Image (tube, rainbow, N blue to C red; front, side):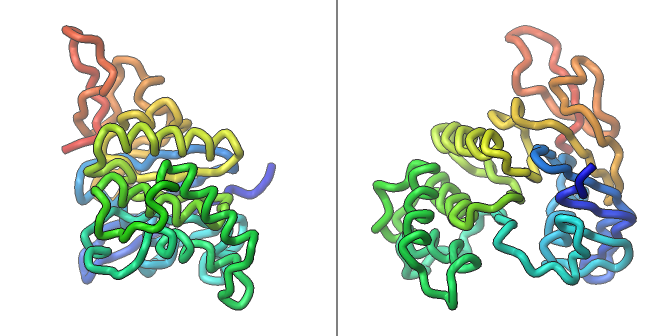
Length: 255
């Protein structure tokens, strides 16, 4: 058996003095698509931010590709898509410039070469933004901006893709494009860990659901569609594909 791509053992973390993760265990194996689910404040985003080193670990161990996270240096193997915010507003950059920044981890001495530019173009094509390559990011809609953030992560051609609420605030057309992009990445062997507030069009891709509640894992197993009418413990969510007129399936993803 190969090492898990991601391994958390007994991980605890605080924000300020408030405990957010209370000793969670999590593994993601090569080629898996794992969704972190739970109500707001359950610790989902903090969990992935500990994985990439943005939040310090108070206790426990994190490994990436079998190496302790604190000593991990091969970040070109990891693509990260943060939650979309308005932080990029006012940035005087084009779509290509933003996406190119995601390739720097593979560029020699920070200089993009022919292969790097080709990877940037491929990433833009994957998310349907090649026709906006020269536009300012300030001219984009929210859904288009999210597609640019995903293209930036894909430009490095990562083996592991970590995404925090990739569908939040995104229009339906962009959701479908992003879902197809993710399907293509999964088909090529990319491992995916993503935080979701709603399953939406990504539901068929999910191999495993990990539900957090108050910083603890309350479910780690089949995704909701595999559970039929059985509820995930501790939460309440209407299944997105329930037939018209049918009793909603409660799966516990939202507060």
